[in-house]
Length: 184
Image (cartoon, one colour):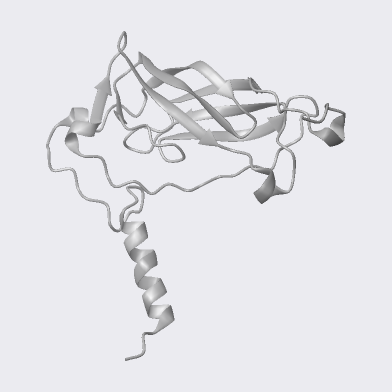
């Protein structure tokens, strides 16, 4: 039996898209009847990235989310490149946009116990890690420093908060013999 590759590819694509909560045709309706599950579209979040570390390839840290105004419902998993994204990545010295890795994430819709509604005065935090640079894939050396905008997406797809970050390499690359380091 011969499998039609186009049909198989289309089926895989549709299954992949159905796992994405933002794809309108496959999104499950919220039958909870709880208006808090949607949150407030006018909510404003406050973001902090604590214990920030950049090793030349990945940026990591503990992302804290608070609310200045309104009610914010978010996915507690804080999935990188789905509910937390880095945008506008530029080199600190040159101010030029950088080539970086951007891996799409298609998480399953959050379960009810994975949703959290925050109100002013309450905070939530989770560890995040963005794999951004790889000389093998981009063909370019990673920067020593970059600036970017970190964006948070609420459970309903809104962007209630942004944070400007500056990341300097915390782990310096070891010099090689070609760069004048003593040979072992």
